[in-house]
Length: 395
Image (cartoon, rainbow, N blue to C red; front, top):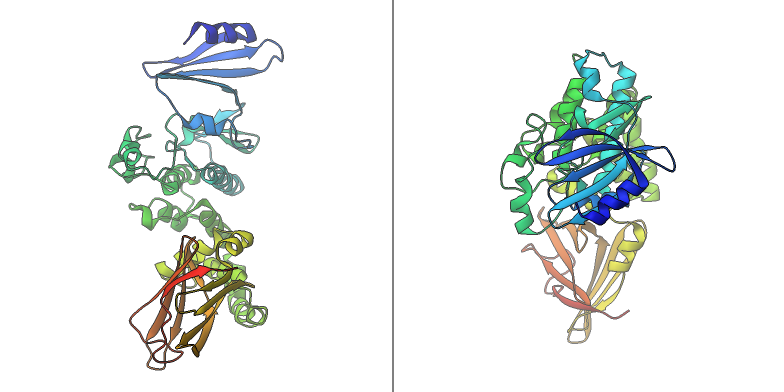
């Protein structure tokens, strides 16, 4: 640590004791000379980039970072001293967590991880030792193994340098593959198995959390929360499922609200009442990733191709399109319908033809326009029309 940093710490803080010290890092308990508040100085013998992002996050589930300094091969960070004990200490003394405490801890862990994941951070070393518990509230600590999600291939290969704790780290952290939110969901599942003990209430949920392959687990902590609430109110939901379906296809069809419909479908999926294909789930989740204004800004407008065919995309309760094609200056057909987002820049229209085949029209955002392609099934609108091509935005 540089002399000027040591001088600053000595000026502002009183050194109380050394909590831990090894070849990787040292942890010192400090006391603020002005406020009297306790905090910890962590000096880590490597650069932990994620602390820069954590310093800007304010959450009841995360410790506050008061000071951060990076050197060439060192990270010095002063963090809030968390009151309470680790969940591991309660487990070691044989504490039996009540059903209410177990549910509360489970939901709080989902909320805490959701905060991290929203900011693109994966903890990667979630375990009872790194969860403080006091007055029914939890806080996550020790982010030395945390990382930010990246598309960089080189970073993906380096993702396994910090493997986390054996037994809590998922299988992919031991292989050359980039981890994502599902790594933390795995560790949360292992942790909650210890908290729940012999209580089998969350057996199915926890089994899915700790699936061997990432694709076998829940995709997000929000999905885990939905499953918890579904488990809690399963009896009521089972009784109301039939009436809920009537509402969904009756009242909701009248108001044409696809967002509500998609939420109900995901709810029924997580509750085990229906099965959605992977493609259906991906489409629903893709739509939920963007707000209405963002979708409008990206897609809505009027477009025209080299043959002067018109394409217009609008947004009511979802994306809709109208396309008019011409041949030798004469209108040949008018088609349209609801577009389903597959991702931010790809949308699909599908329609079953009279022959029972599925016709698909694909639209991809490209430069200042949209590229339209279709599958090999004949268009259901008319024969001989040419819909595919590049449509430039004109308004």
